Length: 117
Image 1 (cartoon, rainbow, N blue to C red):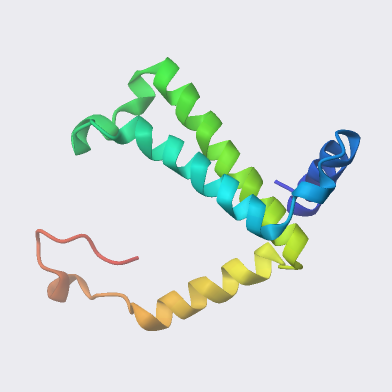
Image 2 (cartoon, rainbow, N blue to C red):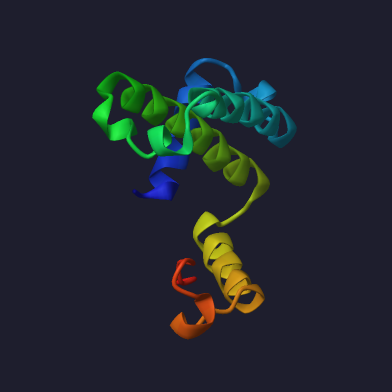
């Protein structure tokens, strides 16, 4: 996925509808939270096991994909309107997480815990 091209497409989409005045980082973040709630709602009453079998339910899987896309589109727009380079921010954050959460050696993790890779 070309994030820059996606941002340009979203800018054109908004411009064609005169939405630009409303697409402030604050408004986009608020809209993203609403969409994230819609994503969470899909899982609300599922067991953890049922949530891992969504691919077996094509209609639920499609709905989930739509909500994931909504959240992603808002995130991409927030970054665009705030001058954030998503790729650089992601790589930096993964590096910070690697320092904060160093990998466990298998023997330390125990048989019942997944390794942190």
